[in-house]
Image (cartoon, rainbow, N blue to C red; front, top):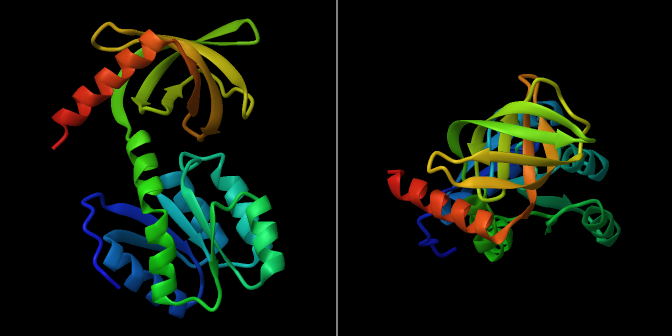
Length: 230
């Protein structure tokens, strides 16, 4: 397997209780330049989904459990993580793709096969990582839902959305309107969809609409923040 020369270090989560799968994935991802964290059970994976950010997930569990995990993950801070599902046959392939898998890994697995598949999607995963790069802030925001307004605090910002601490949790997948000012006094307002929430009262919101001027101002601010990051 050739060594991947890209500088971006991607973070992968493997869900499998098979030591052979862990060894194969570790070998393949080392060649790609990725970090690998492993969860031996779906329960451990769920804890990791809620506690850390990953760029891609490899699910080597039964197909039903895999799709349940995909659905759960889409409601966490890892909602946009790229998902590989390991499958045994054509029937499982169809079910996995219909159930939300981004790509498939066919069994029996091999280090070369994992390397080839992950490499072919690496640019997409890296692009989503850049889009999802979060910058911590503390900014007042007003969120509107069903004609009611809620004051909150923006805790981090990315190109794709914001994480907001609100006085109460709003219904999952709700569409809300929001308005806040960046530190540079650029006003950002638009609509967003609620993607995840946690026990600390923080909700992840994915941007749905932004006025062109708002988007340009946000991208300029993000670029400036990126330049400051070592």
